[in-house]
Each structure stands twice: as structure tokens, then as C-alpha cells.
Image 1 (tube, protein in one colour):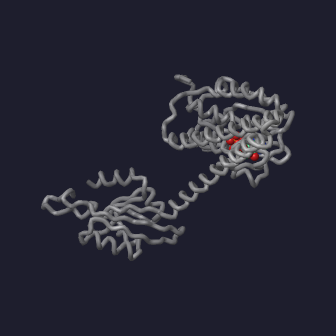
Image 2: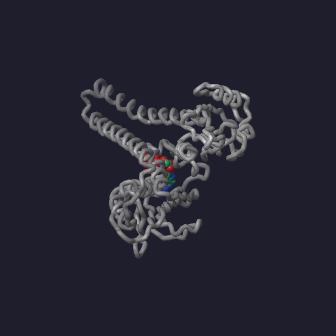
Image 3: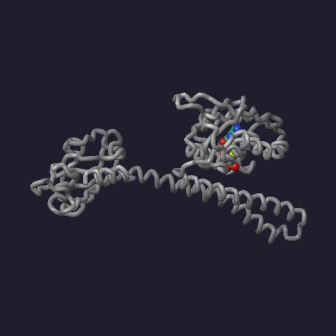
Amino acid sequence: MLSAILSIIEGLPEAALALDREQKICGFNNRAAHIFDLLRVGDPVSLTIRQPEFLDAIGAVRSGEPSVTVLFERNWPVTRQLEVTLVQIAHDELAHDVHGRIDPGQPDIFVTIRDTAEQETLARMRMNFIANASHELRTPLASLLGFVETLQGAARDDEAAREKFLAIMAGQARRMTRLIDDLLSLSRLEMSEHVPLDVQLEINQLVEPIAEMMRPIADGDGARIKVERLKGGAYVRGEKDELVQVFQNLIQNAVRYGRQGGQVQVRVQRRKRKDHAGHWISISVKDDGPGIAAKHLPHLTERFYRVSKVSSREKGGTGLGLAIVKHVINRHRGELVIKSRVGKGSTFTVNLPESSPQNVTG
Ligand SMILES: Nc1ncnc2c1ncn2[C@@H]1O[C@H](COP(=O)(O)OP(=O)(O)OP(=O)(O)O)[C@@H](O)[C@H]1O
Ligand SMILES: [Mg+2]
């Protein structure tokens, strides 16, 4: 019984703990330890959770109420608004000792704890995201509607204007399509965050065709792309399409925001990990453009963050590229390192855990 309850607690996505008949703690999960950092199995719960509301709730459950929810605030180490639910564990399922008595060490009350402030922050983030996304869609839509009205009215018989406006309208519609594709990518990534990666990929072979594909775009912007391969192969476990998206965005950014007539260097290397957990396969994309001021660096991977909204929008950006990059890298248990100096250029480095080159399947 105890072990069953403990494994339920362990597996719960919420903070949870169990108390025995003497109100001592029989078990708790990491989330509970995160909120109440002094929890210890065997201690009376009142040593850590002293709020009278909570102690009254224990009394109420013990005197027969099947479940009680109380709200209280905890101010240390940080302020939290807690919603705590106590549930009586059915007695007839409890283990009895040889004399038929209920073993006092068995779990008697099950407690779950929700931090409502955390939920509010999440809700606020979600609202911000929706507001941003709607704004990004509304801008091209408003411009499309404006052109439609002009074409129906003043420019009805002006062939030259019509051609010009239709081209702009097509561009705006493409922008909205790209924005929606990126939003869908992000939500797919969020859903697949815990799906294991089991395909082995060779990174030189993955990066070169991307650079090749970008060359016509780069030529238009007058930039040259150079790829430096890692000899002997660069093997990682991963999801090919997702990694393609990462390198596409990094190379595209380097071309887009780099120097006209400049050079973009893609380098695949193998590096010792600082945590001594083997090696990274390290892919860096370096440009010699205007660089990015330090104050922007920590925000670049936020959704919709752009150093210059006008310049990025003119260049067809949605500000979601690096947010997607960051998600993909997290899912691959890697890291993204951004180094940039104003006037000197930027280097975006992706570190992915190396896998041994046997059983190559991808
Ligand atoms: N190599 C770079 N040099 C200078 N600024 C950069 C570079 N890469 C990214 N940035 C800045 O970071 C911002 C965010 O990049 P991100 O890739 O997330 O979005 P985007 O390129 O604007 O749009 P998207 O990638 O969705 O088309 C860019 O708008 C740009 O201001
Ligand atoms: Mg981009």
C-alpha cells in the first residue's frame, strides 16, 4: 500500500505528499520538496506546513470529510499562493497488522498542492502569446484589405498600379502562411518534447544540402556561404526535419542580417564537453554582419522577439525562427550559444550530444 501510494505521488505532475494517521510524512515528490524545502519522511507535517488553515483541514478530513481544499499563502523562500487539497485514503484498503489493527505508518491522508501564482504566470504568458500572434497576423491582413479596397476603387483601371499591388498582396499572404506554419511547428515541437530520438544522423551530410539550397538566396544578398566539414563524420541522434529547420534558420539569418557581400561560415566540429559527459558535435554559423547588441542576446529565442521589427519584417521574418531553434535543441538535449559583437558579426553555435557511429540509419 505504502509503495503504491508513493509511486502514484512520484508520477503525479503536481506537488503531492502523503501523511500517516499521526500526521507524519510518509512520502512526497520533488515538486512538493521544491515548494516546501524542509520536508522529511517521518517528521510531523506541522513542522514544515504550519498554516492553521492546513492543520484545520487535516482535522476536518480525519473527522470524516472525504476531501477538503484550502487556500493559503506561503512567503518563504518566495511568495506562493497555494491551493491544497486533502483526501482521506479509504480505510478498508489499508494494511492491517497481525492483530487486525491499522498500521499507524500507513498513508492515511493524500495531499496535493497547486501553486496558483505559477498558473497565473503561465496564463499571462499564453495571453501575451495570443496577443502577439494576433497582432502579427492582423498587420498583413490590414494591408491586404487596404489594397483590395484600393483595387476596387481608385486603382480600378490603373494596370500598372494593379500589377504592383497584387505583387505586394501576394507577399503579405505568403508572410501569413509562413507565420502560421511556424506557429504550427512550435506547437508540434511542444507536443513531441518527450518523444525519444532514435535515428542516427550524420551532420556533414545534413548541413551541406541546406547551405546549397540557401546559395541562390545568398547570392541575391551578395553573401558567400562556406561549409567546413568534420572529417571522419559527425554523428548525433535526432530528428532530421527538425534539425534541418534549425540550420536553415541559422544560415538564413546569417545571410539576411549579415553583411551585403559578406561571408557566412558554417563549421562542423567535435568538442569536449565541459561537464565531461563525452563530446559535443558543434555546428557554428558565423557571419561578418553588423552584430547584435548584448542587451538583445538573452531575448533572441523568445517568440516574436526581433532586434529591429521593421528590418526583420521587410526581410520577411516572423521572429519565430530562433524560438523554434531553441525548442529543437532542447529536445535534442543540446545547447545554443550565441556570441556577437557590434560591428564584428555574430556566431550562433549549436552543440548536440555526439553518438557513436554504429548502426547508422539516417
Ligand atoms: N546573424 C544575425 N545577425 C544579426 N541579427 C540577427 C542574426 N540572427 C538573428 N538576428 C536577430 O534576431 C531576430 C530573431 O531571429 P529569428 O530567426 O527568431 O526571427 P526572424 O529571422 O526575424 O524571423 P523568421 O526566422 O521566423 O523568419 C531577428 O529578427 C534579428 O533581429
Ligand atoms: Mg530567422
